[in-house]
Every structure is written in C-alpha cells, then in structure tokens.
Image 1: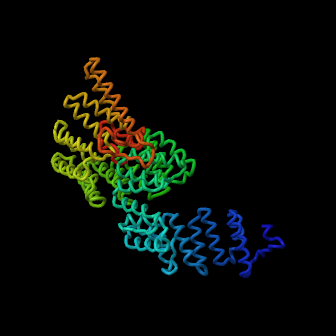
Image 2: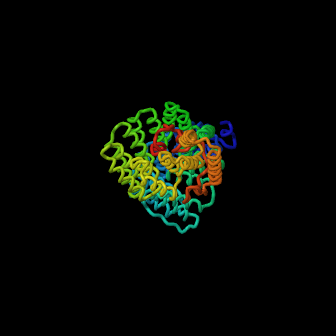
Image 3: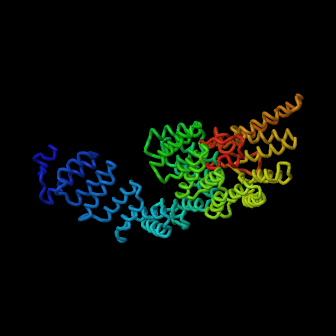
Length: 559
C-alpha cells in the first residue's frame, strides 16, 4: 500500500468522489491483470464503502478467481445498479453454472435483452436449452450464434444431435459438418470414413476413437486413443471414453498422467476407477466413480461404468439407478445395454423388454444392435424363443455380421444346423470388427462335428486376430489332446498353425486412426493393433471382468 500512497500516486483512504473511485479502480485492475489478486482485493476492500458499480464488478471477478462463486454473484447484483447489465448477467450465469444451478443460469441469461445478446450468450443458451430438452429454443439460439460467427465450430455437434442439418460454405468445415451429421444419425462407419479424410490431428484421432467405440469396434478405438496419447499424454479430453476400451496397463499410465496433470477433472478419477475394476477392486472403483460424479454430475461415462461395476458386485437394483441416471444425460446404446442387463439380473423382464424397445424407437429403428437387444430379452423366457429368433433374424437382415444377433441365433438353431453354418460363413464374408468371435464360434461348430483340423484352423484364426482370446487358446489346448500322435499329422497341423499366425501377423495394421478394420474375407481380416485385453473375447472388458463362460454377447455389454 505504500506504493499507492506515495506522493506520485496518492490515494486518499476516504474516497469521496468519482475521480478517487476511478483511480482506485485503475490500480486494482492493474494489480488484477498482473496476477496480484490478493493485493487487488485488499485495495478494493479499503474503499468498498464508497464503491461504484465498476468496483463491485471487479471485486466479483476477483472472487471468481478465488472460486467463491456465490459471493461473487452478490457483488454482481450490486453492480447492476449502474453497470452493464448484459455483461453482469453473463458473469452471474457463469457463476451459477459453476454451482451446478442450470435453471438459475438460464434465468440469468434470459434476463439479458434480446438486442444486447452477443455470440457467447446465444451459444451458452443453446447448450443449456439442449441439456434441458428444450429443443426448439436450443436450435434457435445455436443458429443465431452460427449466423454471427460462421467459424463457431462448437455449434455443429449440438445442432446435429438436435436433428438440424447444417451446411457450410467454408471449406474447412465441410468434413466436420458431415462427420457430426453422421454421428447424430448413428452412422458411425460413415463418420469414421469422413474423419479419415481430414488432416491427422489430436482432434480427429480422438473423434475417430469415439466413433469406433460407438460402433462396437473397441480394439480399433483403443488403437486411436493410444495414438492420441502418444501425441499428448496429458490431454484429458475424451479420456473417459478411452477408459472404457484401453487395456489395464494403459489404464494405469492414463490414470497416473491425468492425476498428475489435474485432479479436479473427472477423467482422471474415471480412469483410476476403470483400472481398479480391472484388478477386481470393485468397491474401490465405485468410490472413485463417486468422486468423478461429484466433480461433474453430468458425466455419462461415470454413471455407465458405475452401473457396470455395481452389476459385478451383484447389486442390480443400484446398477439400474446408475444406468437410468446415465440415460437421463444422454441416450446411448451402451447405456441401454447396461440397463437391460441390470433389469434381467434383477428378474424384471417387463422393464428389460420396455428398455430394449425404447432403444429401438429412440436410437435407430432400423439398426441391428438395438433390434438384437430386444431379441436378447425375449430369449430369456422359454415362450419367447421363437420371437427372439425372429428378432435376431431381422437384425441380421440389416447387418449380417451383427455378433449380438448372430451368436445367440446360432445357439437357438443349434451348432449342428446347416443354417447355423451358413449364417457364420455369411458373417465372415461381410465387413465386421469382431471376426475373432465368429471364427471362435465356427471352430466350436467344427469341433462338435468332429472336424478337428478345421476347428483348430478356426480357433487359430480367432487367436491370430486377438491373441488374448483365452477361450480360443483353451479350445486349442483341448483339441490337441484329441489329435492322433502320428508325426505326419502333427507336422501338418503345426505347419497350418504357423501359416495362420503369419497371416494374422501380416493383417495387423499400423497404429493409426486411418487403419481399416474390416475386409471381406476371413483370412485377410484386418484389425487394429492387438491390445492386451479384448473387449468381448477376453476375461477383462474395459476394466470390467466378465466370466469366461459368459456368451460373447454378454461380455462387453456395457462397454
């Protein structure tokens, strides 16, 4: 204070006119800009009794820096008497958002006159309206924001989710708009293809990983997220999604890096929870997820992982609550899968069927995976097996390689059925990201027909696509004991195994989000880099253990 009471910059301790207030304000703002927040606060406190609206506003900004949001709102309200109401209401809305008072934030923004609203007001209002399900108002405000600034790229994603087609005359935006529209329509393959035409960057790789994850290509998604981590290990964006598909060793490193960077971000706690779940520390995982939810109550991945972990703890009723909360935030197939499994575990078949049908109607009426989910529920009751069969067949008409429909339908038809063999062969000829599961099922088909050599070939193909497929490895070990000990037979079998492994090795792509994950033939199937824990075929799925005896449809049902 001696500096500000020197002869050159004298500040009277009792300001009695506007010039004195202005001088105090200028010095306090100078301190604030220099990062001397506490000094600025002390200076303003000495003159708060005679403060004007500008001083109250600056004092509120200082309190925001100190995370005292409720107190800051009080001073912004005092500043409204003679200050810029639009700016003050905006600051008040930001404070309310920090306090998780969404309705209060909307009210503060709506109090700003229409002719005083700028880009940031329209953008925030649009996002808040979307979160509250007020579709019409959300679209209106987002389009106004885009009209003011065509490069407001963050408008494209919520507009696409709201079903509004967006076009752009800006070259850089065309692919981004097409990607967002494809994601909103749940056309994930198109989205990935469009992303691959964009320049390689952290932004595009992360979104390619998310699109692959939504398309049930967890191995390809993990490859993208690993590539993104190589570019920036401390990036927290999208790392909660990465926690759902990365293997345990990567999860440990991810959690460590994120915790070191910022413990106040929910992604760090979600990654730690996923790692804990992968080590069967499920109670610890739930505690870590509760911490993540306290940091961000609208983080859908935290609720999804919490529901899956509670199911492992045999607490289906609590799992239903977690998945229901996730569904209130965002309607996703991943959440509906968990909700259906939780209801089935709680023996609430009517509720499970209702949730599965809701997934079909809300997400994609003509998509294979939601239809297969309905078939899964119908298959749980003896009288519903025929209906389940029709549901699975309908799903396969949409996607012949839909594993969620193919494998249970083969079980219903019987592995000795010619129809089952034909379905498996058709699926192998179609583009698919989970051909290892199909090869394994075909190997079981051959084994029951006593075609040991063909069965071994299929199991080895499955193992070449996913070396951590414990079921395939176990089947191979069992079948070797049945082979005759003839040196010629053993030598032939070993040559065939060697060739199969070499073919699988040649088919592994580089770790790039441009890697193609599907082809049309079984032997040249291309997959993303092998990860340590496959989503559906190993005993650990995205940090969530599943019994080896469980069907591939059940494994990874939530992830």
